[in-house]
Image (cartoon, rainbow, N blue to C red; front, side, top):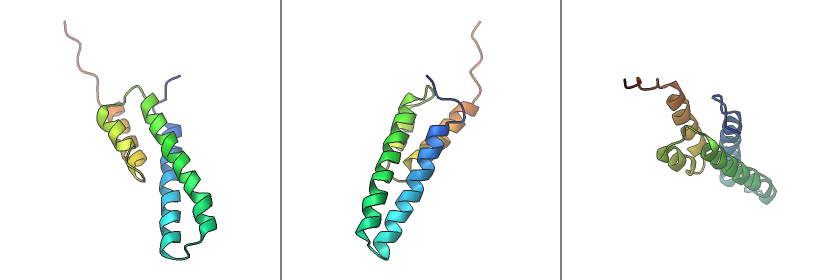
Length: 96
């Protein structure tokens, strides 16, 4: 099963990863509530792993796309942007 051009799993994982990171950082800077960290941390980790697997399964991936996906926090968003631009590039003309 290949991923479609819209990358729905990667979009969702990128959004969850960014939001959960923001919640973790805000909690760290303000309340430092262990319950928030223990709930949000695994969500962030799962979103991070889903993003990496989504990039690895994409047929348009490149080495740089994989490297971007490995960056915690914003890597999924950066990889998504690179995959979107790779899908927009026209195919090279056929050699006769």
